[in-house]
Length: 116
Image (cartoon, rainbow, N blue to C red; front, side, top):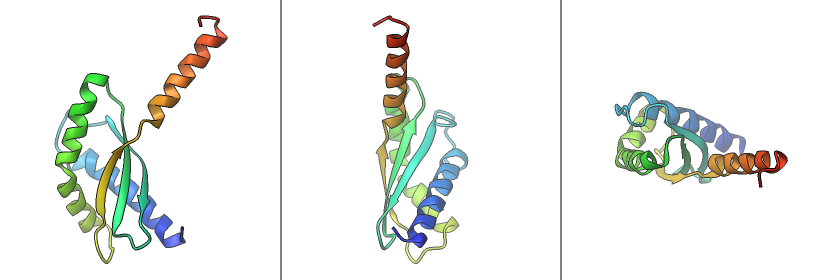
């Protein structure tokens, strides 16, 4: 990955997080969504946005739908904030790695305490 792509990736990650926090006026997602990573194509025309939802299981689907509904607005805001020749197509992908890590940590704790 080139230095430019790395800069674009980091900028997109920061800006998308900020847009979700400030521009999507929905109290249901405020503080519950974390952008964990962004993968950008070599020509910056496409970006995979990995996000994690830090909320109870029953709220996750609803929050995910709110994000998907707002993808055009997020892309529009990215276009206004990030100076690129073309604004990348955004594909939001749920990232379960934080939850898997938490489950593994809990299992290790239980094993070390002799509960399992």
